[in-house]
Length: 337
Image 1 (cartoon, one colour):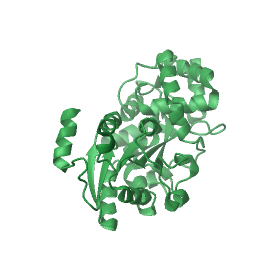
Image 2 (cartoon, rainbow, N blue to C red):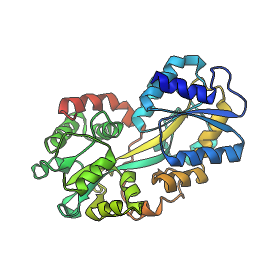
Image 3 (cartoon, one colour):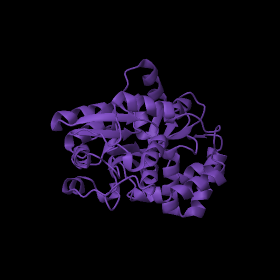
């Protein structure tokens, strides 16, 4: 980690306390091509140069904590409510008041005092093997704990934020005791021990290693949008299902950002947050990465639109962060490795 940080810092010439005018220093744990478009368009519109440091969320949070008041970071942008919550809990954000942000970002998708704002959302869906499962056999996340699904379910490991945030949502909806029963039920029905990312789960379902998997929708969308023969073969074998349409709705998570507590370029940082909530930026989130935009009136990508409309969970996203510690402990008790 120290070598990574040193290399990036030297490459960007970022020295604490020496940020230049009309620059913006972004610490980002997102690694999507869409973000390069966002940074480039932002510079075109504002003339503000973006200096980027990338790393894993936990590494960047630790870096900002170590840098303290001397941190050059203006913006921390990351995926998942759990990472936003950890940065918030460490005091790494400062509240932002902006009429543009308040008007564009729904209350569900920002921290109440303005410490961070979400700019794109993702849904945790069920991917199923078309030969083994019919859509009418699927209903809710809880239903996957039934005995009929024993040896048929896949998921990422419990150290993944997506799993933690979904569990945090289950705690909010069901209470901790019932959420733990759910987690234990999923573990009992695993086809194998958790390993790999969401794309790995989809591929495993396609080849019959399991019958269903819990994944973020945009991983499926990427494969569905691909022209590669091997990806077309995968999509021919798997389908996508949005759970809990008769109850609280399909689980929703976010990508979001906040202004760093000691941002040397606060005005530029606020402009960047406002840009992320603009129709142009929202369209990039949608088209380039198949995420759902948060701004009303901006459509998802065509491949995501092909999935059809569905009921989304309306749980305030900051609840996922508040329940994160309980979710991590619950997953450990459940044996979700």
